[in-house]
Image (cartoon, rainbow, N blue to C red; front, side, top):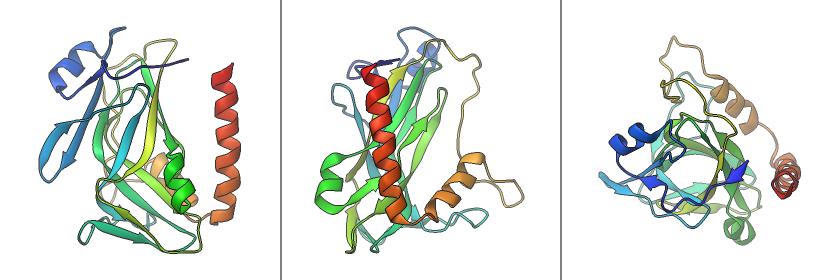
Length: 212
């Protein structure tokens, strides 16, 4: 797989995105929703930041999960605990790109706060749920619009067929939870010290794979 340089591959046009989703020159749909506005997302050479939107949840065992709007512009995370937050960004991937969600090193070094590493499958479209972990012994505050994670995009060695989009909408009360939702429930219950070891191992493995 090749890491994609993305400044010229990003669009906020759903028409352009849909027209090119099967093409070798496919586009990434990236729109930031803030204060009712819909804005194109600026990106660095090889990564796109995911920022804290407006909703969070602390218990995914409920059906459906109960999300809350933040009170003001900040959310406090208790020591050695985790919360689910929704990104301000709506991301759409074409049929030939794959996304990796990685921690922001500066956030972890300064506060001991980091997101669970995760993936974005080809054909995904929607906002993203991030499991944010506070590994410190202090309360930590994250703010609306703060960058919490970075996304790298990789080209797949084949184009995934099908036009149906993948979305992780909140399930209806009588609908079984998706696999991703069940996994998030289990992960949110794992003690934080185990997260640190898992993140370290996963990061080392990823670096080795990309180096090869």
